[in-house]
Image (tube, rainbow, N blue to C red; front, side, top):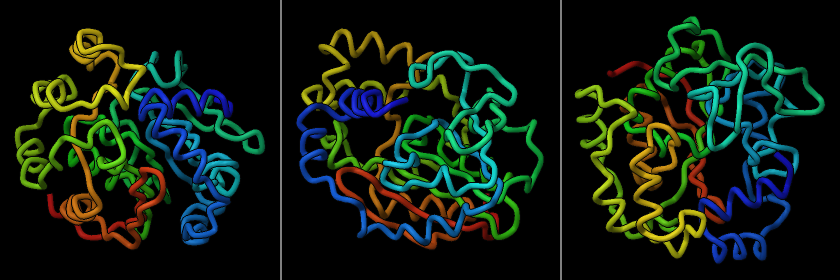
Length: 267
């Protein structure tokens, strides 16, 4: 995806007014703790869930792709709204300067074909909000990381997206979803989303009827933000699964970014 594609993706997700504010306020990112992120991936073997992500490209907020030693990928199916048609095998192209990684085609919470402790780090940018069962997915990622491994996770701050009218999800709710083994076909949150989704910040969704029709096919397209996050909730859910947050940052215009290491397991 080039710069134009990345821009269109942001407009589709967050709305033109938001994108314009982002563009006008954009800076070379010196305030970001960039060195801390690089140390987590430099020369090491990793897995990205979703993507490839503009945020990790050379001109992105956290440019990491050119520092990794090897990077594989997982997307939920052969055809996605985000990446078009995908083929399994060594087909994951994320950097012109790196050889392709392995492309897995499976759910982010069902990575049984990947062995325990096989990766040094995991990357995920704006994927987990689309999941109906975030704790199940985080637990799965925890299993894949070696002792001392790292998760770099980005989620949207709801205050700057079309979710700004929705209440922040509680940790208790996420635990209930985990205990009930909620699947990705779940539409429990759809009534709330239809009532509170700010379509003025999501022009790509069309009018309410178009948005409703698309949302009812969410298992196919995965466009819904199933859950709504703030910085505190991100820290809570990482600890709940056994990660130890090392860094939690807010970045303009909408990112909650975190670095978390493998700690003890609780679930």
